[in-house]
Image (tube, rainbow, N blue to C red; front, side):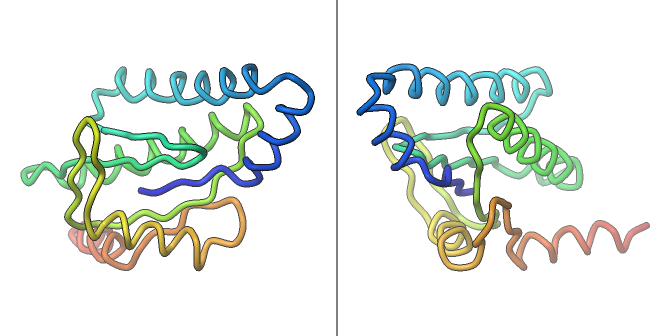
Length: 145
C-alpha cells in the first residue's frame, strides 16, 4: 500500500514560516507511532517506510490463512487512515497485491509501482483505492461463503 498525505508541502511551508515545523514533524510522527502500536497489539506483520509525506506498507501473505490477512490488512489500513485524519493529515493511496522487497534502506517492486499509480493517477480525493488483483482475492474468499 502506498499512501500520500495531501497538502503536506503547503503544511511544511506554512509551518516553516511560522516556526512550527518541528511540531508538524512531531505530530506527523506521533500519528504514525499511534497507528503502528495498534498494529503491534493486533499481531499484524506490517512493515512500513516513511519518506517525506509518503508511506509504503508491506505485509507478507500467510498462505494458510490469506483470508485472515485480508481482514487484518483492511482493518489496519482503515485504522491508519482514521488515526491520521484525526490528527489533521488526509491520506490518498493505493493498495495492490504483488512482489515487494522491503529492507532497512530499500523499498522495491512492482506492487509499489502499481500502488503509486493508483494513488497518483486515480485516487483524486482522500481515499485508498484497492487494485483489481486485491479484489479478485477478496471475491475468491467471499465466494466460499
